[in-house]
Image (cartoon, rainbow, N blue to C red; front, side, top):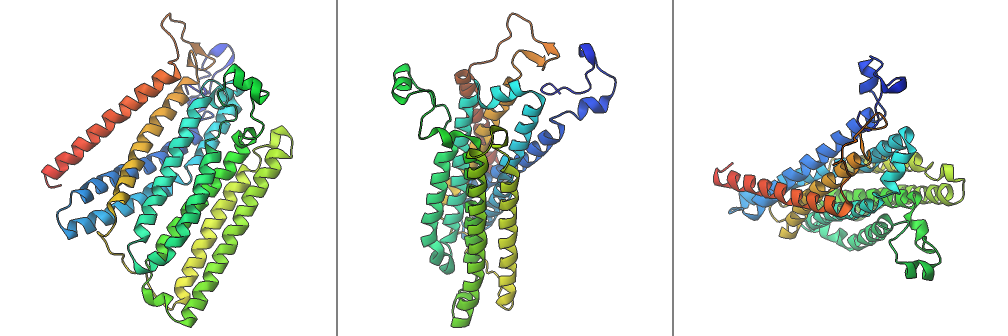
Length: 391
């Protein structure tokens, strides 16, 4: 309500309809964004707890239990992370719909540089989540056969991360602006537009799903991969999934390039909905093929991976995910509140006091970082108490 007040009549007076005030522009997108984000955040904290207990485990049974706990928490956290960018797009679109000025301040004004930090932190989340799955793949004989594919997924993630974190208008000195020929770099400026970033985030999501798919495959019993007939059936399933993923990626990239760079400015992000649907279709279709693959193998079930054999580096990835989520939520919470400027209730009730000001980005970043350190210290202390009390 403070950002997009509803139920306000002429002259800034309340029209008396409480539902109009509640069901404002950000009511639904904010609810969705917060629910999904808190599921992801909760999963990351549980994963950090499991990592802490795993690293301090004194028996193979304990390591196995907390290995299972860390994997389950990471699936919940990453599963909620994948749709989170789309919930953020809806939230941002509603901000623009209510006030273009507030939307411009959010994405292209004084707060735009914080979105570069956001891109770096989100990139760290995706890389850490994938690294954890790559470590998990190494636990089984079948998984080690898939290890050579990891470098290609990593290269795709790195490339998308560079596009995701590229600013449209980088900070430059006067001499640099003169050398470049303007505020926009002729080569990297197109990568700073939302069409390029929409392509990057969808490809990162599909790459992360592919890591998860390889992890699922790594849990098959070795016998499934032996024998000429089994190899033929498995090859057909892999070929179908490869075709689905390739077609999806081509569609995502093609839509982003066409609508982003060959149409009117109004339609530059018109492909975002189609790209999201393509990503969802790719994920669902590949899972359906995987299910059929199980049936083709005549009931060959997944085997439990060797719990407790997870490399310790994978546990540090879980801790990184929790820290990154905490920092990201603090930074973006500041931005969401600060774009109101000097309004208590945007465009209705102004803060006219002498002490009213919006903190500088550097100051807000330091406060958020200190808050993250303090919060994680409390979390670590709670983990320590649980160990002392044998919880």
